[in-house]
Image 1 (cartoon, rainbow, N blue to C red):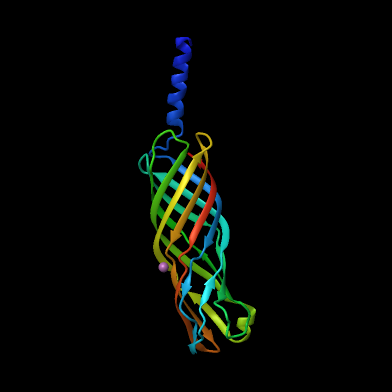
Image 2 (image 1 turned 180 degrees about the horizontal axis):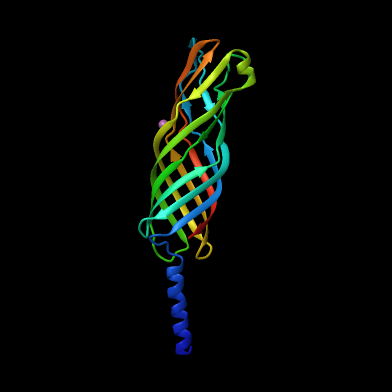
Length: 223
Ligand code: NI
C-alpha cells in the first residue's frame, strides 16, 4: 500500500499535467512549417482574337508557411496564415494549338488568410483537433509568359486578385507544455481572371478557378 504522501504527490502531478496541455484564453501560438498549395482548378478557354479551344491548368507548389493564432476563449482562436510567395506553373490544357510547349506562364502569389478556429476539446488531451472558417485575399504578382510564348507575341499577363472564403481542419499534438506539432488541410476559394496582349490585341481567360487544397505540417510553440 502506498503512503498517503505518495498518493497526494501522484494526484498533484495529475492536476498539473491536466492544466499543462490545455490551451487557454490569451495563449498565442506560433507555427512554422511547410505549406503545399495544390490547385483543384478549372478554367475557361484562352481567348486571343478567337477562342483557342484550350484551357489552362495550374501546378502545385510548396513554400515556408508561418502562422499565428491568438485564443479569444479557451477553445476559439483567431489565426493568420502567412507564407513565402508561391510560384505556380500555368500549363496549357493539352493540346497547345500555339505549338509553344506545355507551359504557358508562371505566376506568383501570396494568399494571406485570417480564420476563426474552434477546438473540440479544452481538456488535458495531447491531441487537439479543430475546425475553422476564414477569409482569404490572394495577391497575384510577377505573372510571366514563358520565353517561347513571349516569342510569338504574348505579353503583359495580369491576373486579378481574389477575395474568398476558406475552411480548414487541423490538429495540434502537444509534445510538452509549450512545443507541439501541427497538421492542417485547408480549402481556399481562389477565383481569378487573366488578361494579356497578343501582338497588340487584347486577350483573356475569363474564369480561372484555382480553389486549392493547402496542406500544412508545422512545428509550433505556445506562449
Ligand atoms: Ni472558386
